[in-house]
Length: 598
Image 1 (cartoon, rainbow, N blue to C red):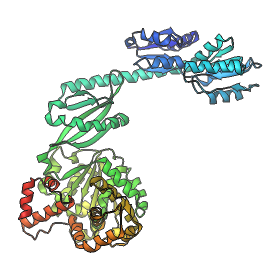
Image 2: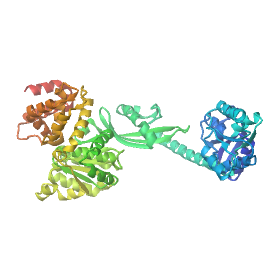
Image 3: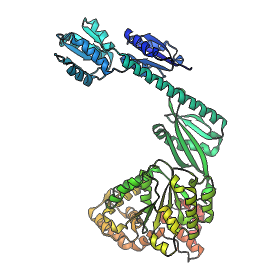
Image 4: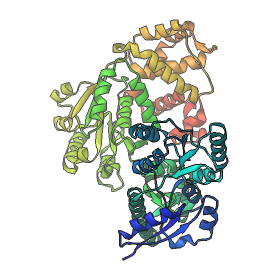
């Protein structure tokens, strides 16, 4: 049997005997016990080869000093109620003497309760616990000389100094019940540590023999071990992995998707223990898709912060407060959710918010754009083992699912049914329009509808919840202030009133575009009613065109005209910045300039 090796540091002789008695009750412990005072404990522990032991047991202030000097598990023998009662009962035999109760630990409540229970005839003085030896001595001297305390009940440090003054003392000793508990705790800690060490040795051997891309970091974000340098693309991952270290160490694990320059990576993180019992963060990364792959995969990974910001916006909505409370209950399960309504109502925002409060809120969130998918891309999603649809415990958003052609709707319905997608993951879909009407007109698959509409949520148009406009406007303004070189403090009351009363034909999309216009044109810290009136009257047609940006492109135009429309749309979104526009479109600035000049 591989016995547990325990080192005991006894602050008084009786402690050694009780600890030996507790150890001798078991046959799985080898132990050595040394006696040490408060002054000699640290020097003693430095002279001992701690590699021979699995854990140390001691008590009180002596134990705390020992604990600060070692790097193996430590167990403190705590004062039990029986220990305190025994000491106070002994003190009760000297009832005519003025008594004080003093330890380095805050035991005042327990001591007061026990003195009442034991019916002490004289009040016992219980000072606040000292923080160091000097403070302990100062308190005892004041109690002895100024308050004429004759009897001190306390721990080893209190009793040792009070005795030098000639005072009567009662030491709070640790009994068998406290000692048994400490020994059991030490064995439990050692067992856990050994098990974790064995796991880590096993993991290390696997890492050395496998081709997995792994990296290990300590709590200071320093690399302890890494195989990522073997892959030039993977080496970039060191940068983004560091932001997940604290979360991995706190929660025990993490699961996410991240991007480097040319690659999308799946990341799995796990907290492990080092040989010195220090927590480390172990990450394994797997290549999902390269840049060329991503171009034909119509999905993106949505970050947690974006979802949390959306949850904050939805939770602040007065009009959606009732449905939001229900959503938080539904979010605990995996029932698929369909969000429907007219264009520009914030369906995507609600989907993001749902993910944030769901049981999968810390796991990857994948958004699949159904308005930009063809048969080839869908087959890639269904068949490529790197596809997010092959994963478990993700949130999958099918955005604008009504834009799928009927044949792809049927394929998706068949896939969901035969792969248990909605059982393995949380599925959310957004739908623009009236689903039952489209089903009756044979424009949407009834089978697919029943697959995705376990819960269906109607998002009212912006004009149906005008009380939310101030909240939405302030939220957008905060985002715009972060994205653009402006700092607008807010809206004049009359300006906000005008925004609230406006008929937002194209919903939140239109409001967002208008706010961008206002931020660019205003010359004040606050957006004024004159600013709002000017934009609404002079740029109404431009706003309408830009607000319709989410609707399908007019395909009756020539290819060159369609390309120009797309370029102008992106250029407007980037506030005329041609460098950013070219980067988004994947073309050079010179190519962009040539197309704009046609």
